[in-house]
Image (cartoon, rainbow, N blue to C red):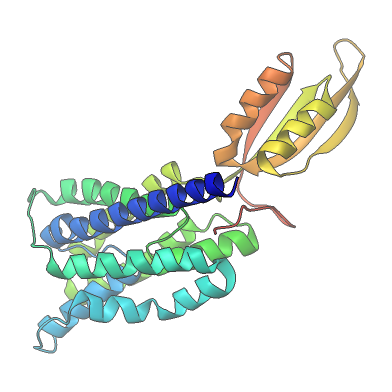
Length: 292
């Protein structure tokens, strides 16, 4: 049993490492191709890093410091938040992504794929969101605002990506004042595309409410508990059409769990009626699977 468990654990860690490596490489490639070609600011700590580099060259007359020299120190406080609140293994892999993406950004050559700024914004934003999602999918992050967003999502139960987007807008306004608003406005399109891709691909902190009318509430509750570790509340009511007593289960699950819960409900009670409602915010305790 220990041998099987250790193999599963090793396989999981190898998969995690591969996804993090792919995410870091894709992130660095995007910075050295789409972002550099368009003169964009991707937002977050990466945007701050590029902003500092350009201030050094255009306003101070100094050579641009290496990306690694700025980006890694900026992530020290978020990394502390990760170790303290989000898990050591999660933080270790996140630091790996931060370090690898920084080094690759410094050593990879700049590759210009297209000179169309709008195409750069759209497809660069898609690549950026995909790169971040690869790390998030296996329990890591790209650092910076990802740490902060995950912290608020777990502690406050808030899907914070749109709030992070608004913070990035403030960074881009600063970039616009210093280097021209054309680049800043195009960067907003880039960041919006990135945020939408993350929300589409990574649904851990998004939530849905399930309202289930069923004749087998205990069976369905057992499946929900088994699959998600979430609880449910049973309401008794009267069906207006037939005038008979009906049972309604109320439960909130993460968006990533909805499809498997619906499949389990259909299997256990094909006659069940389910209403799925997108939930923007909840108060109180909500179970999140550990990052580690």
